[in-house]
Length: 565
Image 1: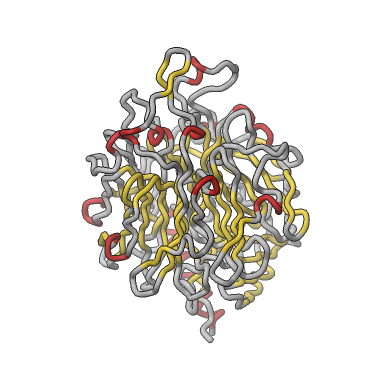
Image 2 (image 1 turned 180 degrees about the vertical axis):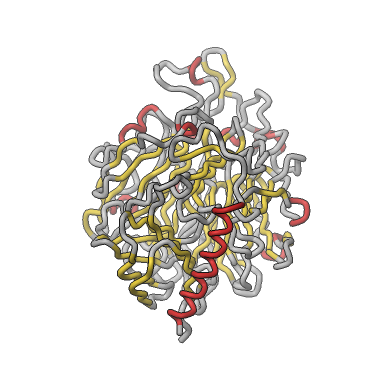
């Protein structure tokens, strides 16, 4: 019965896909010979990022640029929510006029601005976006991490949202950065973890000068701000359990967090947290299963660089890049530091693999958003990185050569064994330079390949469509899976999926909150290479229940509901 239901859903999705491919495309970028093309303007996205820069050099101006993919209307097409800054960064805690934007996906053929209609135009200084059905009512909600008061929008299910921040108990202010939803206590409701950056009030920020020029102050001049864990009570409200859980101890133990990833890093069935910190050691909070966490980052070898130094951690993502069944951790850092690739070598032990994997080219670039995905659908996970410096005067002030303010993004192709090389046909967008920040992958046109949304300070939102499955005679095989929880959270965050096809086994994590300030496509997007049949799909749901599907045809989108007890 379950198999029949899954097949029916996939047939319906396939019909929608056919419509999208045949008649719903926007105008093509004439420079789309490569894998990716810029379709921002042709698909109706006209978003400009406002950071409030006036020359006074407030730190928050350098960190903006978040986004979230959300199917807010439940039509099967991912819509796009873009976080905006503020016209006056020195008073960022007060509402401005720029506002965040929500774009409705018109079946893959364009986007319509529905911000006003939906009621989600938050006008605070916004950074991170976290998407989840936190109340398990069947539609996705929005959390926005701001400088000042955060915002929680509850989806009413009629195309509009309600600001429920005050009633939910989420009004605590601070320098919000990334956020993620995860069920840390196994009560079937998604809890909220908010990464915070600096103890910092813009209008009291100290002036910093270098070579006679006003510059952005180094984060070492500020104290870190404690991250927040909110337990979902299941009644629409949340309880701040940060101290009770051991995640907010105060003083020098607090990091300067920017990126976060929730995942089961030790295989015990519990959701842990990895936090990328700027100029302080990164955290790996292991879930002890009793409501508390312990930082094991030093013990496990994922706190510092291979030389034992703190770095400027920005974004983070995790994936099984070599088929060993365990998650590797990629962290983006400052220029002249190189990014990190922590590879698991034994239970509770990681080693730095950045050089072995040939990812060391990040030395001259300053990375922010980072997203693993099988962009060429060959059956292994590649890596995309958004780059851009924080100092717009770096080319004037820097004593080192080879570092620029605007930097091209990276598309790095996996050889199947965890070694990467630059894509040779990434397309014109990867030849251009941006002040990149957030990076969020999604199959927005439902054609089976992963597209990218790049957030930039200089160009706003840049939508990059993957052309792999739109080129004639070059279509690649894939399997897309959307998980729907029944006994656990509806979004099924925390599930893992193993896809076996063509003699290869791939591990995927169901978690939208990743990268830098972003929420990604929550679906499992598996490339299959030349395989037209998936031998086996093993789903481990939150709570440990396992479901197995066999002999699935390729090139379909499945919606799989968790079996009820």
